[in-house]
Image (cartoon, rainbow, N blue to C red):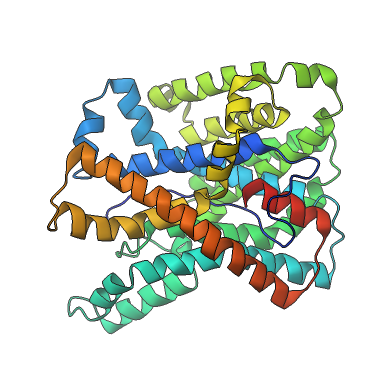
Length: 393
């Protein structure tokens, strides 16, 4: 279980107020998009070598198989969404010591409760590692510290796969620390500043890589994605009052999605210009979010349906629980008494993950989220609260 590729997904929301509210400015298509991305991540994991659907997906036509294996690329869109939603949520908030305290509590409440649940699910396997004689006491202490305080994203592979996608939460907490500063710079920016911001977001990871910064310092590399999301939110504000843009929104994300798929299928074309896939996809993701946010076309309507929206709200739980569930599924279903393998096992696993994520969303994420925020403050900024909770639950 230690070999799963790291994929990240982060919902960026939280605070109190009616969870079913849909305030002005709420963009349900982006909530539905979260489910699609999370599902892509899970399929990517299932397509790995010796995984439940590995042989089945490898047998599919080449382009389809390549796209499934490219599920790790959802990281960029997830982090852009994180910056985008926070910028929309806190657009009217005046920052102070009190609002910063509420913000930190909201961020912790959004991420940590379901993450803690994920560790409880694999507690048996954590115990096995802790009592194993194959690891030193220092290694075991390091594993516990990294997983407890979400330091995985700042270190090389921790060599334990209790919940490998959780390294992305290290990135999110770092982004949260940076958000007030980034937002202060971009909050009222005009086109010149926006263009400069996007240029920096595209070039920064390339500069960091050429400077010799270790690749495992993921929060520093992915900060560009988060900042691009904040910039996207500002672009949307400038576009929202322009009817000619609204009427052509569907034409924005279709060619962008086609271009992104083409680059994923043909990454070698970038080698000659020493470009990487993430750098090319970053501006395309900005345009994709803008197109869906502006709401044009049948795809945006499909992602805005009640079912897609609800699954989008539960998708953080789906993302952060799917590897812990896979530990038990592999031991009890695939290699245990049931001995179910192949496509039937994959379908049963996906159904289990989705059912567990809905239960976690309803009975852990929502109530614990409210309780933690209530400990800090009985009332918080209404616009930030209503938009965030409606956007991602």
